[in-house]
Length: 144
Image (tube, rainbow, N blue to C red; front, side, top):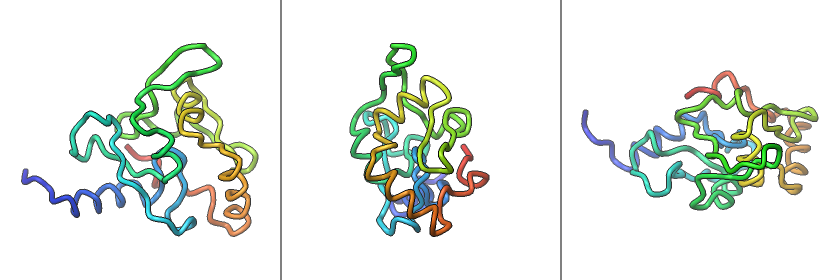
């Protein structure tokens, strides 16, 4: 199989994620900001299976981290990997879509590390919900 150009790779990552952050599910359409193509393993390759779509908050909060701390178990665990794990097995929307709740140590550690329930984002979600654009339809975006 021929290697993809970077532009084709970026397009693939966006389309595969349905233009939503693969961590917090924020829609690029609703926030009107460009999403980042993020390296799941920062030391890994630029191959599509090491890349995901990420909003600025999740990407900048994750930085080079690959693990996070789960306060419930007191353990350091690997962060959610959208290429290998199902989103709905680790996360669920609560409070009518205002906040994410971690269902597993991976989910809880990812929410904490990536600051997914940061108050300014929760406040924005309130308006996205009122506008009918949040939470996204996970049938399309919850694919691996």
